[in-house]
Image (cartoon, rainbow, N blue to C red; front, top):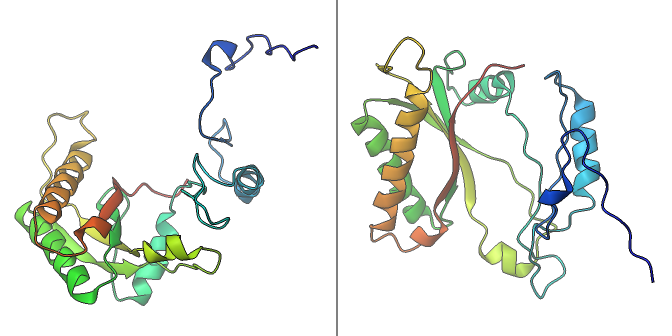
Length: 208
């Protein structure tokens, strides 16, 4: 019986880092050039990753797999314009991706906490956008735990950097806001607080 040998160390590859883990694929342009071809290739990678590491008893319910791409400012500006939200220039606002409860009153309570803390931190909440989703391929178990997905837009106000080279001051402010929100919801009496989660809260970069 023969076994395949590990490839030799070359370029960015080192066989010493090989180990069993959840499937991950990465497609990049080393010259930082945006293109739809990168997305097409990422989808091809995704076709070989049914899930990240676990599947449920239903063939169409697992822990999920997807692609992560940069969200273009032009896209967000266009979508927000339809909602009557005027976005500032890139670097002057942040985008929070938020998982919210399905119960309307619980969802409103979570939004109230977010809006209150954003105000307490001296920032301006510009508005909300409900993210369109398609759950036709989800199994019943996944659908039962499916949250409402929304984006919240926060404008930077009076951000004071530590120095002239400090370009992460607003990022730190958004991190503080996120942590305060998570702690407040967790400590609340909101019945569906277990459905609340903030996957990301970041400063929006300009389009590449």
